[in-house]
Image 1 (tube, rainbow, N blue to C red):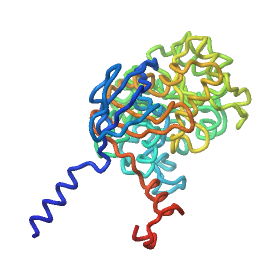
Image 2 (cartoon, rainbow, N blue to C red):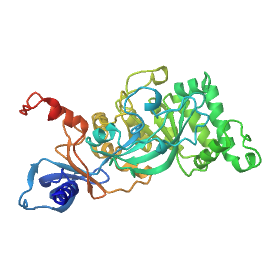
Image 3 (tube, helix red, strand yellow):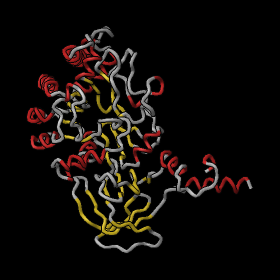
Image 4 (spheres, rainbow, N blue to C red):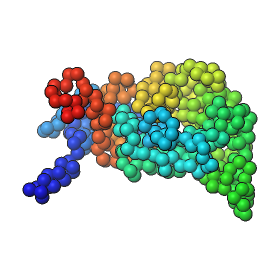
Amino acid sequence: MRTLLLTSVLAFAATPVFAQTLFLDDATVVDAKGEKSTADLIVTDGVIIQQAATLNAPGGASSVEGAWVTSGLFAPMSSLGLTDIGSGGPGNDAASEDSLTNVSERVADSFNPRSIHIDNVRQSGITHALVAPRSGSGSIFAGTGAIVSLTGKFDSVLISDAFVMVELGETGTRRAGGSRAAAMAQLRAAIDDADGFFKRYADSPDGGDILSRQDALAFNRATRGDIPLVVRVDRAADIMRVIDIKKDNRSLDIIIVGAAEAWEVADEIAANNVRVILDPLHNLPETFESVGARLDNVMFLKNAGVDFAFSNLGALGVTKPATLAQHAGGAVVEGLSWADAFASISAIPASWFGVEDETTVVWDGDPLEVTSAPISMSINGAPQSMTSRQKALRDRYNPTNTDKRPHKYR
């Protein structure tokens, strides 16, 4: 009996509880560039088994009309896996307030793939994310960020040393001691420390002006251009100072995050090959450095030839970027093509960091519409669960649930 029970348990564990075969009749298929076509598809466990102009539904398959099939979405800015709630203390690994290190701190060492937000965000069609730290006290440097897949597995960190994160603007001002001049002085001195690493630190760990030997070595990868330098900044004047840094250090690969007033200096951004991560719905002057925020910011960048990606930076978007697709949809309202908007949350950010995972997401409608949702998905051929703790709680306490048992036993 013990052997029989064990065999039954193992058989159940080996069978995905979310296994399903779908027949997609006249589905809209979106390629990597956001271009659309129509086809019939058979999808099993999130993997496309067959695709043609006309197919017959296989036995036992669930037929779906009006479905869309796309690659997975990529959230190009998040703090996923670093905190489950927004409180400080040991439960929040997004920033190190009292640490003696900065650039060399890797979010990959803090990332928790079993965070409740991972499953919840994946339900929105997001399969990959950039995970960025926040700067701590005394430094504009937040640390070294990572690229992860949202499988929830312990090997889901794809790139541990993906970029170096710097915070300028009002946040950098506070961190550096009280002025933008102090923040820029820190950045310039740190670049000098890292560029001259092998000479300055040859005989002494205290050979730099700003960075310790450990942090200068970590920053050296960004100053050489091996990995991007991601800079959080909004004000147009601050963006121009970042461009000046780029002009003086041509090897830097700079990505600006925020860029609320980027429209004012779009031509300069494009001319210096600086990429931008922005929120297309940011149009309110939440701070003095974003007084010039406007909804058509992205159209200025598009017309200038800037390479950009979208993030939902407002509210809880960085912690829980589940509304990423709807923010991209907002850019379509402002005049951006559907294809460009979709690419800006999928193929474009993935290409920036060399992510080549094969992903498939089946949606019940246009993914940029707020009423649409994924019904099946896979990452590298592996089906992904479409359930989460959030959905389980919803179903347990749903007033229409006919289960008469007490809630705790359902």
